[in-house]
Amino acid sequence: MVVERKLYTVEEYEQFISQPENADRLFELIEGEIVEKVPTEEHGVIVVNISTELRLYIRRMGKGRVAVEVRHQLPGDDHNSFLPDVAYYADDSRPVVEQGAVPQMPDLCVEVQSPDDTPKEMRDKAAYYLANGAQLVWLVYPKKRMVEVLYPNGEFDIFRDGDTLTGGDVLPGFRLAVSSIFEQ
Image 1 (cartoon, rainbow, N blue to C red):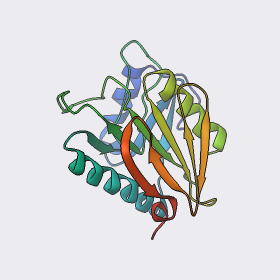
Image 2: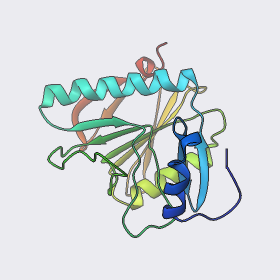
Image 3: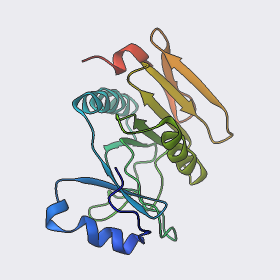
């Protein structure tokens, strides 16, 4: 849901999200437009399912970091500030950002489709993530029970119920049954 049809800078966006009436709401800045994220319970369950499996993977491997709904804003990009539903960082040596946005893209970005999200909007986000440092993007479509995996080289894979999602070079040895992503 676009808040107002006006081009905002990151500075104006940060002022907007810091207003008391916006304290408990989620917003992204996409190509200069402030867009509110309104996740459903289904969305939240899927995010927890994925982030839990990533956290278990991190514990097994002894390194990495996973976060949910964390803002990422690249230095020099004055019109975009995204909150991937799930973000995974292979290198956990960078200090955790305690205030403001993370100044780099995660290695893996996960976006779960909400009722208002179109596949084109999701792919546009994925293209931005991949063009700016992400190594892997998972687009999760609950109604189709499908995950679209996108790579920096422009290739993609589709995983459905019965398939097992893997993490490739980003998450070596990671395996997740697609059906378990959608468990309620």
